[in-house]
Length: 400
Ligand code: FAD
Image (cartoon, rainbow, N blue to C red; front, side):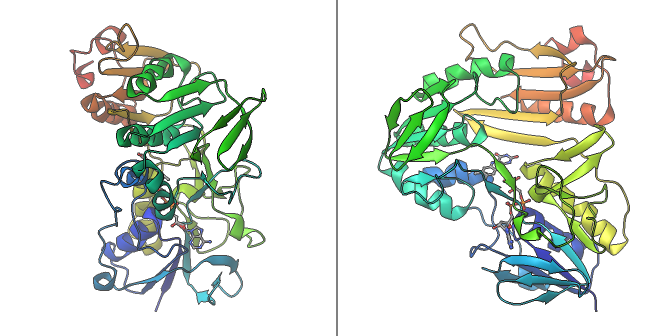
């Protein structure tokens, strides 16, 4: 009987197990996850769970009914490729096929890990540690005005807690979007009563305080470090699984790794994209949701299509629904649909990026989900748009 072992019980690992069964796989499936919680969704952690309006978001999967063995609190420590065995902290797990789905871990600042009152937000336990501070309306400093910083600031303000967001770059969301888009977002912070300080480089974090590069010291009841994440692949050192320079598992376009019989999917894996002509490492929910279909199809021989998605993500911040699909490049032309408003803060708007030949490369929509849904399909098709029509928010994007 074939044995599939999956390391990591997040969305990607769980989806892979479920889709294997759906594809007709009849062998044994074992999912080993380091966390003690049953598999859950992470997006609510920085939203409802942080705010206390939800306890958590367990994935709706009946492991017993599907005949999937779930080993919680079980950490993978390495791979014995010759013996085809996953090594774990509680003994070896032999496999015929192995799927690496260990996701990502939050980045910290040097010397900040484990300090009292200094938080990251990646797991249910992280959210549970931070939640009482919001409930007590304590003060929070968020380091980084990325997705996590913006969403945590939103939750903090909704709870009535004071929050200051420190961002080293001159604009919020510096890694994701160009300044012309994020400049209007500055007002979102202000209107919510959150303080955003850009150009604020943090030199040191101590319990209850943050020191900026210029020497200024800011105090708060808690500090949240939201400066990004990196693939959780440290345990693969010496295993024979090749890693990319960014620490991700180097998968191919079928999500196979460099070790025979071993796949990698989700936040931990990068893959070559023919669509974009380069290797992609995607840290968004949709990629962990979609990638497992490729692994399950290839592993069971029920399909052999390359994995080459149009990346998609969303964020809910300051009462707005921000969505993005595609990948824009520095040479793409930026086109506005709708007006972010004179003070940069009102209204719904969409930005389209058009390539030199007029093809739609990427879409970013604020409170215009229909634009996003249509734009995402147009990006996937490589459709060309008429810039004048596309700039008219009254014309459905699919008719532009
Ligand atoms: P993970 O979810 O990281 O799961 C990996 C699992 O493997 C973890 O449980 C981990 O403990 C476990 N693991 C790690 N190492 C080992 C080991 N050695 N042995 C065994 N188990 C191990 N994306 C969006 O598109 N929109 C959003 O609004 C959004 N909000 C988010 C909010 C937060 C707070 C966070 C943290 C992420 C958010 N994301 C969002 C991103 C999205 O949640 C991730 O892309 C997705 O969770 C990736 O799934 P994954 O299964 O690949 O990895």
